[in-house]
Amino acid sequence: MGFDPEAAADDIEAELRAAGTPERAVQEQRYLKSDLEFAGATVWQIRAAAKDFVRQHAGIGHDDVVSLVEALWRKPMHERRQAAVVLLEGYAGLLDPADLQRIERLVRESRTWALVDGLAGDVVGAIFAAHPVETTRVLDLWAKDADFWIRRSSLLAELRPLRAGADLAPFLRRADLMLDETEFFIRKAIGWVLREVAKRRPGEVVAWLAPRTDRASGVTMREAVKYLPAEERARLMAAYREKRPAT
Image (tube, rainbow, N blue to C red; front, side, top):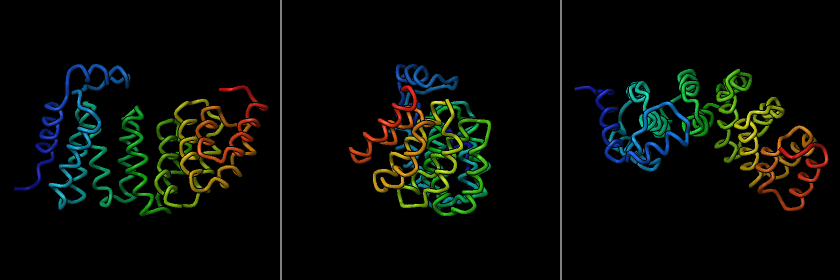
């Protein structure tokens, strides 16, 4: 008998419902300001259930994974959708740039960082690491999209590759396009990625940020300078404060 994605999705849901509590369901729905259903499972319980599935079904192929992800996603339940994201992470080696269109749709339908950041940073990040040229073309298009979650994804998708030493220039090009934006989730994403790069390549971050302290928001600046040498951190923040009020 072949793999049944609907049955597998329902089994995962049953496990998550058993792990959840009504109190946590109410708290999580309120915290994320979501209109999805919540079962009250923790992030760790969701990740454990999805990772157990990956371990037990290591041999399934790309099409079965995609079918399972779609089955999980179809039902408007937060834990099912978060499990779908973790499954995509677990089977990321089966994905390639042809899957980016599907992932883009999932990002558009997510409307919360709790789903978007895993799709962008872990799933698209893994595709980027294996197929940088093709993925870069897609991310450059995402950087100009009207949906700020898609734009945020174009930034966070490079987080893992950049930690591994990837060329910073494509990210900086996209970040420069969005540096003047007022959307918090864009400002935070730019700063977050710069912060991580600064741990190993502080000079590149300083060189890019120094002439842009008049454009960067306070959110971006505070994140970006967090791991820079103290002298550089103080110099950049002083320049920022001189040129514009705190935001």
